[in-house]
Length: 184
Image (cartoon, rainbow, N blue to C red; front, side, top):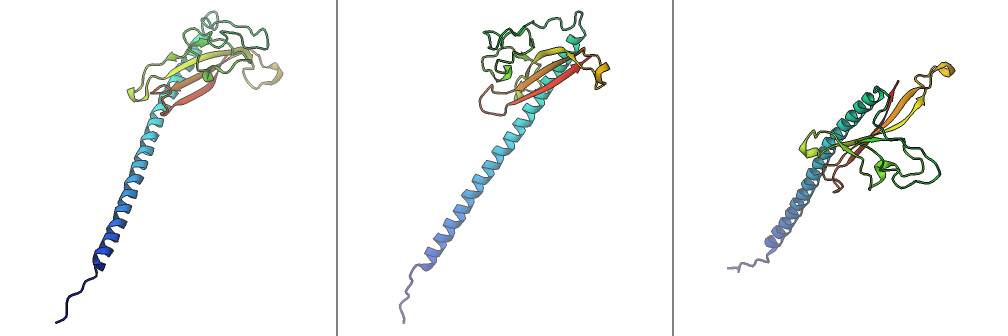
């Protein structure tokens, strides 16, 4: 009788196959985890965008009301740009979310981290945080329509800036929106 001689080839082949299946499983798990993070970020962004859009609409409603007050724009602080520098306090000179015409020499308010003139809009969802806005009065000498030289230049313009950041700078979804709102 012939002695049974085995070289272990089946064991080596099965270990190699097991290693390949394990690598495929790990790659699949990493892919699913990444896709889950992307879906979560997309959901966060959507919620935060909707909250910022809501704050923008609230700011536009405030601008509409303020344009109809007697005298018009009652409550907006006044500011006159006197030179070619950004004076101290020119950025943070807002009252209850109402800001005067921005100084051309200053950093835009929404880009200045020290700006404290944001006003809270009511919270839409606790997941989206509390959206905020402020309204800047841009002036009242804009044409009301495209009527040419006979068009009166007495229409008012407001810039509304809104933001929603559920973690206030934590690196999660943050949205800043702006609109120019016109009234006559």
